[in-house]
Length: 160
Ligand code: GDP
Ligand code: MG
Image 1: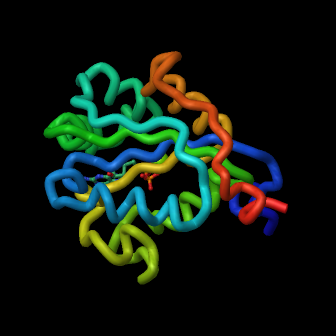
Image 2: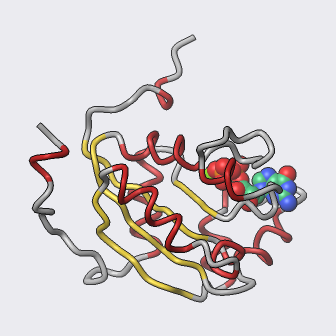
């Protein structure tokens, strides 16, 4: 079967990555940022943020009808989150792979959730699931002026 969202893209994309409140409380912010930095993606936005309920509801609006939705909103607004925008070739699908499966017990060792978490309701990190949602979520969580366009000096060593 052809699953286009799982095939590595050759396009420069943006994705929204967020350390959820449990990741912040557990002191995993540096570790999580590090995984994306070391991979070679470009950080274009970063802030510590207390997420209002309305924003959490908008971010997760596709899951509105799920029985766990109220608990999910409570979880995401239970403490500060770290909001990030990352850019790179194929970054959306690659970030999802680095993050691992939604249920941390099923996530492969070597992934963030596989190495650092045990429960779906405490899975420490979010990553956009498509390039369209990457754009939508970066625009939802960041104001204009909070994002930074820059050229890392290492770029020629990462992209041919
Ligand atoms: P993701 O894209 O891997 O984050 O997973 P989804 O988009 O399906 O769900 C969004 C988030 O909702 C997940 O990361 C979990 O934090 C939460 N979630 C999903 N399914 C469940 C569930 O069955 N129970 C609970 N408590 N939370 C869930
Ligand atoms: Mg999702």
